[in-house]
Image (cartoon, rainbow, N blue to C red; front, side, top):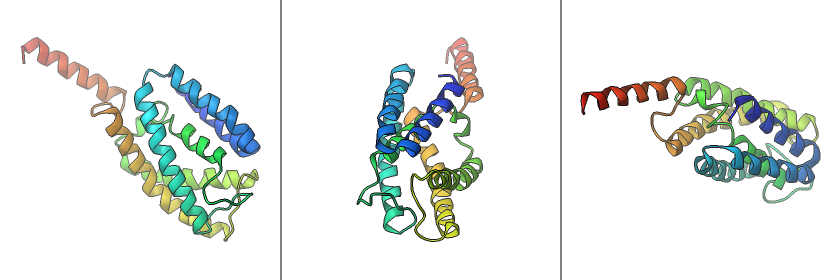
Amino acid sequence: MNIFVNLAGYQAIWFLCVLFGNSGAVAGLFLVVLHLLLTDKRIADAKVIMGFVAAGVIIDTAMQYFSVLAFDPPSRLIPFWLVIIWAGLATLPLHSLRWMQGRHLINIVFGGVGGPLAYWGGVQLGGAEFPQSVAYSLAVLALVWAVFWPAAMLFVSRVYGPGHHCGREKQKDRIHDDVHSLKGD
């Protein structure tokens, strides 16, 4: 899948859901399904989506419980539109963010900075609010995402299989296999 199409699809899902709530989530869900129809990694993507959605419900429900995030109207679980954002996020690791697999420090920084920025953007656009101070919410989110994102990328590399961290490693594996097959190993 083209990395720019993949990134644009996720951004469209994020904006649709944050700006239009559950109404936008219907269009976002359509984009997730379209991704699954177009990808050559359908089964792996579906597994990643299920894992991310489960993690997202747990993480963001906990964020509500600890007053890091609040949604209108309040509910026990996160809103449907946020579930679709998590599903959309799950379309990235095997495609446009695949290069990050196995790069733990980059994943820690990416999660610790990118995660809170996404929530802050959502709050600025009216999708949620920080019931405590902005500094408290962003600090908690930074800590959670600095742990979650590297763990998620490790999960993704396990789902997809060894030797598929990025294009050059995959190419090295193919060359290695070709050399061994020529030797008769």
